[in-house]
Image (tube, rainbow, N blue to C red; front, side):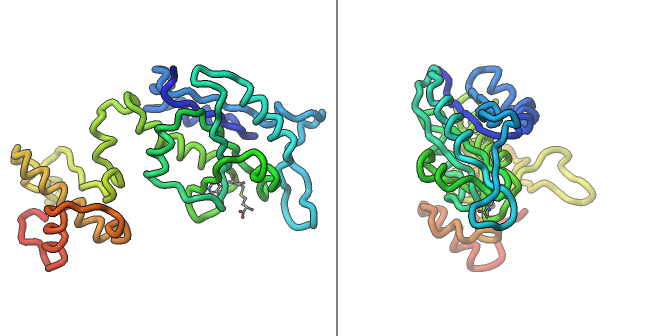
Length: 257
Ligand SMILES: C[S@@+](CC[C@H](N)C(=O)[O-])C[C@H]1O[C@@H](n2cnc3c(N)ncnc32)[C@H](O)[C@@H]1O
């Protein structure tokens, strides 16, 4: 059984082939940890011009994606029985949807059903698609793009890396930004000094306990600096609260910070 499966309805399938043909996602697909089927919406049209859009009722600029091809595509995809069954979670990508975040990525990574994305284009999709075919409407942020393809890829990428085995080093997904509600700590690699800029000494010390404490402190510190809003909803333990009080009190007494 595949660990996670996605079906995508789009009028630009090549966008997916390009991105999914590289790096970690490519390997995950080869290892069958991930299964992705991309469907060209035009294959589900019935006219000779393979029409997927039409003028908006009531006038106004742009075109609207028609319901019939999308309906046909969703029905055909739902009829395809993959190893993890015929059940689908149908997601419409839309700037009006719930704004995607790490928590949603985690929930989707545990989804038993295949996730079916409907990628919009033009002025949007006939409203009856949302009303009759869609379980969830997801946005990747408060801005408008030309299509849902990048949004689908953003979601697939962030969900896939949470699937066991997709990342080479299992630990790396556990320690990243948002995983325990705060931003990631700063990372360094060789050389130890570059144009006068030194790597914090504690990281060269080999003292794992101190390294751990330093990282936790830095993670909290940079969250306070860059995204203080996140600290409102994160559960800090006693040690974290002390770190936060320390940081709030003023310049950090520790070296290398
Ligand atoms: C130009 S947009 C349509 C925007 C629509 N007229 C509105 O203002 O809500 C075309 C398509 O791009 C996708 N899209 C654009 N911005 C998005 C976002 N922030 N998140 C997810 N999908 C988005 C959606 O699939 C949408 O149907």
